[in-house]
Length: 514
Image 1: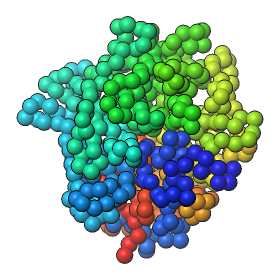
Image 2: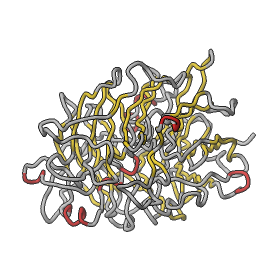
Image 3: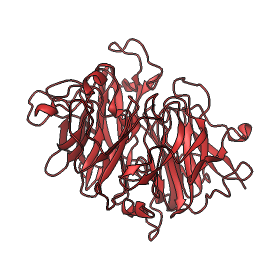
Image 4: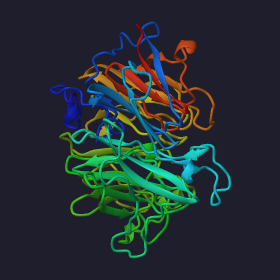
């Protein structure tokens, strides 16, 4: 498996300049790897040489992963920028190097004077505010996506317009933050083949990262108010709705939220994602796919061509044990009996290795999967795995950061190494930096996950070959390196010698200390 990661990462191959972090977890396979990091090595990432170097204040919580785009022409010259999108419905472009402390540009999608605000956590339909769900406001939650060819940023924003909740997709010019022609569009859809089954923008909750493939922007939706799940595709040039899939057109629920992960996409354009509790009758030929992992074809239209549903999907749905609490990651292609595989997990705590060509369907009494691991995820899985050079990394709720080796087409039965530290709810989604197959570091953000204004996030770094060896954490020099209060599902972005960490009030930037 050595070096096979590059099969999934053509845009970040070492034969070409670093193209940035333009999408959630770095690439369409959602591996979380940046294999072109030459500055940060295990030798220099240590307390005396590495720490918090600057930060940017923002106007709301950062649930979206920061994105990094190099060489964007701003103010007459190329600038490396980092994008931060907030729950206060703002998007910022900052100088990624810290040379300019003011935003390079900032746009807001609210206008209180006209009655356009963010969506309050408390509303007539939700009288109590759940502090684990973006209190006190919803705005931009899903990580945006960047199209390098057109230098556009696509972002989904929700607003409250005098009591009417509105969902819009925006396309912004990366150089200026201005809306491009035809932007924004209000999100509206009807399930193909099911007249009267319409997208409910009031109840929609857009948490999963956006995805871009072959000129289509894909946006997935779940719900806080028991609406159906959707996957919608918009033409990236015109923003017109091009494709639509309702997860439970004759049922209920089935949201796609994935713990913030974007849907994964293979080299043939198939989309892989999972769904939450909801109606399921696909096993008897129906069209409802709650509590399932899906392979969705994009040929002509969006349609489910294969799936996996746990044998106990019904009791899982009754207990709200979403499969969609974790993201789906694609493993690099290989020559085993299962050459195309995916890894995912959910609230029940199992980690599944699936054959992407034969996902297993639904089988009463048993799960027909390549592999199922349960030992280390007993408190649930609310995050996504990462991959580097023949190893898969996970950090479940109350568990350690674990490194599993990929042996043929299965993961090792037990972790080959694990961190001393455990991770509180909701666990952590690792990200990896390396210089090809050398100098690999696993980065994670530890948070408490439930308290607004609570404890600071903690950035941690581990040797990717042996995660029992911690290289750095931001508590080692708390006065210098303390981060802002943490947010759930946060993912670090590593680019050009710096690590970007989104928090509740600021974008923190870590790097080498001069």
